[in-house]
Structure formats: C-alpha cells, structure tokens
Image 1: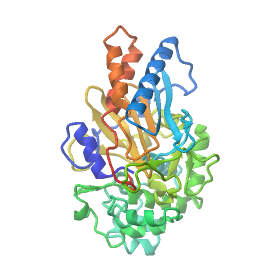
Image 2: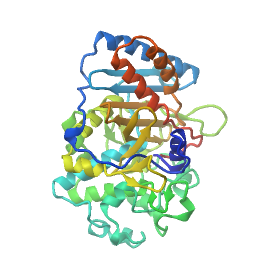
Image 3: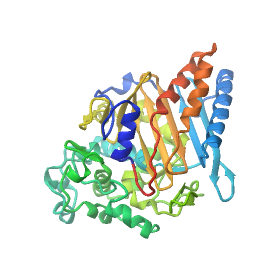
Image 4: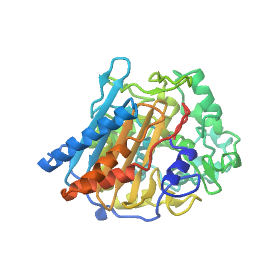
Length: 430
C-alpha cells in the first residue's frame, strides 16, 4: 500500500518537491464523464497495428530491465489493449498471460470506499457517523478522539489516525517477516495504532502531514464498520455490491475467500543478496481492507469504467468520492474517498490509486478528459518502470502520420510513466 516515501517520489516525478500525496480539487457528476466500452469490444485494424507495437515494446522493456513479469490494460473511448510479458513463475518459467491475477495492494482502497458509499446509498450508514456508533469500546478507548472521527475522515485520511503500515521500521512491518503465514484479524492490526497520537509527528514527511495521515489504518477500521453495519463479511458485501453485478470473476478479498487457481508468484530480494526470492506464501490478511484484494487488468478496467461512467454509484456519491482534500503538500496532489487525484504534465488530471504488497506492484488510473483507463500489474517488488520503454516507442510513432487513437495511447503512457515504485525494501506497503 502506498506510503509517503512513495508519494514523495511520485510528487517529485511531477516536479512537486514534497513528501505526501496527490491532485486537483474538483468534483464531477457521472453524466459529465466519458463512458468507455466493454473490455470485449473488438479492436480495429489500426488498433491491431498499435497493439503489436505496444507488445513488442513491452517485451523489450521487460527483458532489458530484467522484470519478472507484467500485465498492462488500456481502455479508451474506442480502443482496447491488454498485454503481458515476462513470466508468472521464475521456477517454472510459465509465460505471463493478460488475464493473470495479482495482489493489488492499496489499489484495494477504492473498492473499500465504494463499498461504504454503496451502503450509505442504502441507508445502512452515513459518512458522518462517528466511530462510536459502530466500533466497540476496546477500540474506541485506545484511539485518540475516536468519538469525534467520522467514517468520511477514515476514507480520506483526514482522521489522522496512526498509519500502522507506515514503513519498514513499523512494529507491524517488523512482525510480518517473522510469521509470514499468520492469519491476521482486523482487531490485531489496528491494535498497532493504540495510544498513538493523531497526525503523529514521528510520521511527518513519511505518511503524515499536520492535515492528513495515509489511511491504511482508516481503511481497516472502515472494513470493520462495513461488517458491523451489514452483519456480513467484507468479502460477501464486496461481492454482492460490486463484483457480481459487474461480472468481476477474477477479483477476490484474499483474507476471507478461497482463490481458485491462486495468483501469479511474487518476488523480491528478501535477504538483499542480489537474488529474487519467492514470497508468494505471505498471508495477505495483514493488508486487510487497506490492501488485500487480488485482481487482474480486465477486472480493474471494468471497475473503472463502471465507477467513472456512473454505473456503480449515484452522481452524488461519485461527487463525494471525488471531493479531493488538501493534505498539506500543494495543489497538485490530493486525496478523496479512497482515491488519488494527480496532474500529469502534458496530459491532464488522473483519478485512481496505486499500490504495492509483498512481491507485487500495481497502478490504476482514469484520465477523465480523455476517457481512458490505464492499469499495470507486476509480480516483483520494487516494481519497475515498464512504461518508459513504451513511451519511447510511442513518441517515435507520433513523429509519423498515425491515427489519433495512437497519439492518445502515447499520451497515456507518458502520464503513467511518471508513477512507478522505486522502493528497495520488502514488506513495505503503499
């Protein structure tokens, strides 16, 4: 899941010299958004030509940078491309496929936020409910000002609740490698925030500012509220409100669901000896509703088209999700309800999220002015810049007389190239 060091790197890539997070403050109704086609829409011959070029460039980038494996998905107003390169298993050398599944880390956060908003539409809770309406005294008594913190503040980070997954030195991050297969409960996880001050000074410039703390802990508490409000598991609520209606058959909440045929292997240099280690066995329950979903590029692009196309939420709910807050790092990076807003130079604004979880990296962006969704998933940590090579290829194509969709696709790559994980350490989430 995204942390402030990563956010600093993201901001720096956008010429923002600061240490936190993301975008321009504005709202939009669903009616104003550009809808995108089904992922099964047929590609034109022009798109076939572009697809071949994109695949060739992706293959070369993966090879040249010694990337284990990656999948990429792009959906525009008329064109669609899904590609894969590298391997899903270093041990068996199995080729990566576009439909392969990955843990997606903090790209989970928009799912948790949308689930809360769906329940608010149903009248089961309100974003203005304070924590004491839903959480037990055993939690409330250990989190400062808990009775004045709202669900809305949990989702947008303005609660200031201590980030239990703030970095490699956090007590929880230290515990995970010692017991990687442990099945964590949400109660065990949030206990790492007990007694910690809001907007903790020790996390300033890492995951907090005086206005904001990255909402890992907040999203876990939101997941607990979802379960209390419905009397069901988070997995069941997510499936009934989002996954099943959208036909997202390759998306699972790993802490509570069996995943048929599993997901691709994940790798990182666990012992810093220069060799990637297989860390697929790490139990994803430690990421909970802040980062514990498994999905693929097809399902993630489907989620984006439904969310930003007005299919999933009412216009009012979507506007609330897109109410991006000043988190103390300038106007270019802001945070909404489980969503990042950022500005890509030469392209415009993007809404979405990125994430990492042990051995994996993800990013998921929607460009509202272009009506384009971009997703990439990688099975190693830190993730690599798979898009710079594609960018070079597309820039060359733009110097030739190519159709407009190709030029637009090139712009997507230009924007996405600026947001790539550069972290070295292992169990850190973003």
